[in-house]
Image (tube, rainbow, N blue to C red; front, side, top):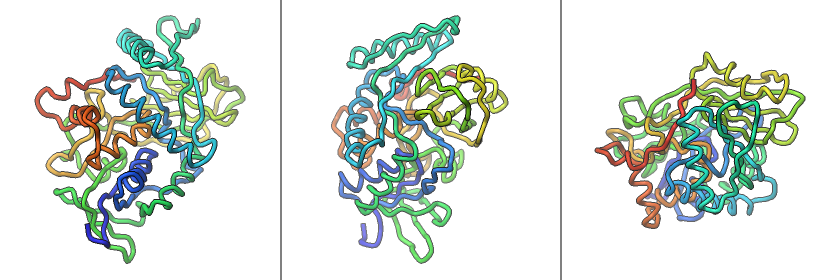
Length: 354
C-alpha cells in the first residue's frame, strides 16, 4: 500500500468495529482507517455486549471463550471500570429454545463456565440459566477509552457524516473527506448499518436477511432481577448499570415490541420509555455468523456474531490479517459464503421472536 493510503478500511460504529481496527493496527502492523459514527453519551445503545452467548456449536463457544479472554485483558489494560462482571440470565420459553439452552448449559459446564438453573414461579414452563462471572462492556466508559487507544496506534477515524466511501468490486475503496482523498486495499463492513448502507440487497449473501429492531431507554424506581436479562423467545434483552435506567434491545415485529417489552420488564415495576429508536439489523437465516465476501464482490462482510460480537474481535482481526491458527481458520471457513451444504455444519438454533 502506498504511503498515502490504507491497508484496511473498516466501516462500522460498534465496539467490534473499533476493536478490530485497533488490533489490525497494533497487533498486525496495518495502516487502518475507520469510518463510523462518533461516540455520543446521549445515543441509545444498539448493542449490549456480553462475553458469552447461548450458542449450540462447541467450536463456537471454545473460540469465544479464548477470544473473550484476550479482549478482556486488552481492555482492562486501558483502565478500570471499562468492563464489569455480571451474572446474566438467559430465559427460554418454547420447547425448541428450552432444548437449545439446555444443550448450551452442558457445553458451558464442560468448558468450565459456572452455569446454574434458576427457579422462578412466574415462569410456568421454561428454563432460566444464570451464568456466573461474565464480562459486560461498560457503556459510556468503554467508548472514550477505545477512541483514545485507536489514536495511540495511528488509526485514522473519520465521521461517516463527513466522509464519502466508494467500495469497488475488487474490495478496494476510495475515501474522501474534505481535502482527503485516499484508497484502501481492503474494505471490511463490520456492523449492520455499514452493510445496509453500502451493500444493496442483491450484493448480500443469501444467508443474510434484514430485520427490524428497537433500542429503548426505560426509567423506573425498581431494579431488574439481574443486570442482564435475555428473553430468547420474546426477542428482548435488558441491562441495568447500577441503579441507572434500563437499556433494552428488541428484535422482531415492531407492532408487538411494547407488549413483549412490558412482559419482560414487568418485575421492575412501573417503567416509562425515556427514549426509543427503531432501526434495521442484519441476521442470518441459519443462525450462524457470516464472515465472507459480498455477493459479486470482494469487500468482506461480518454479520450475525450476536451479543458477544465485540469479544470475537481478536479472532476476527487475526482472520482478516491472514494470521489465524488452523482451528480458527476452519471456523471462519465454515461460516463464509453460501455454497453447497457447507453452512449446514455451522448452523445454530435461532429463536424466532413474535
